[in-house]
Amino acid sequence: MLFISSKSNKARYDFAEQIYKACLEGNEIAGQAIASKNATWLSILREAIRNTMEIDVTAQEWIRGINTEMAEAGIQWVPGCHRKRLTSRRVIQLDGAHPRVRPILKLAGPEGSLKRAAMEAEQRMAMEERAPKKRKKRIIDLGAEIPFTRVPKVVQEGFDKLVKSHQKTDPELIRHLRLAHSCLVQCLGDPLCDLMLMLALTFAACTTTPSIEMGETEFRPAQRQRDADMLAATMVTRMLWFMRPKEFPWEEEMRGVLPIKKITPKIGESN
Image (cartoon, rainbow, N blue to C red; front, side, top):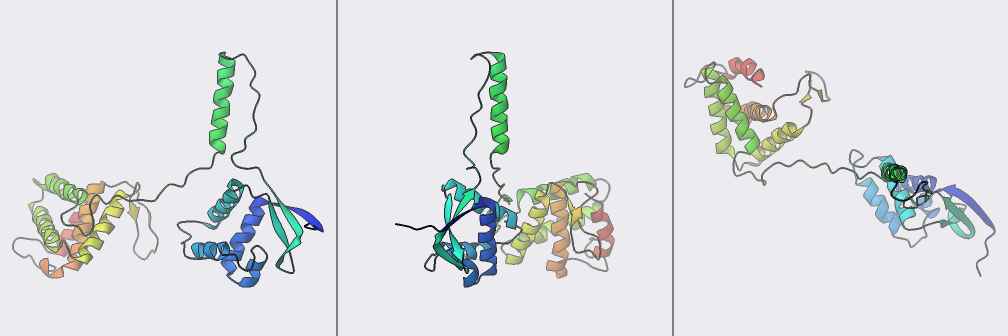
């Protein structure tokens, strides 16, 4: 027969926080207060937390997740500890309602009445608000498989828009853009080209155009939202200058194509 000398209460969230901190500390002493010597779950959870970037899962999200999983598993009691070791003589009762357990509200009004329908709708809305929100997956659809075997649709449409918008007003810029497009086609299959296109497509997929000033180290929302297609084509053109520097004129005109120093202000205002 199990003899219990003491019993105490602790909020399930606080115990989840204790587990999280024990995983961060990463030493045996911290873990002895919450897991037995031969338990493997703590080391698995510790590695998961330590090898996950905080930008993907924050500390609070870890704690809430542990708290939710304990509630889902129906864990209401855990052994206590003495001198940082688990003991069967102490028991901790975890407080906190199970996330799926909702109080049943008595609805007034006869069935089929507008009053009862309104109360049922209000109860459903309240339950939806209390329900745990699913974390949105951070996925960017590049629109093609990697390595790229053809110019991505977004980039191609960006070049087309730039050419169309300047076809009658700036033929020199058009020649430079066509040179850049030709250079892009030639470098497809190069791992550096794949990385370049991934960067351009990522920026194009942003709901707010990222912007960074000279000397700064952090991106900020641009003052105005730029066309995603033309932004991608412009970024690709600028990156190609440095990835394939011999293909572009830098100081003097080459085969009717303006040098980069004269094109830079033009292409900066083109989108």
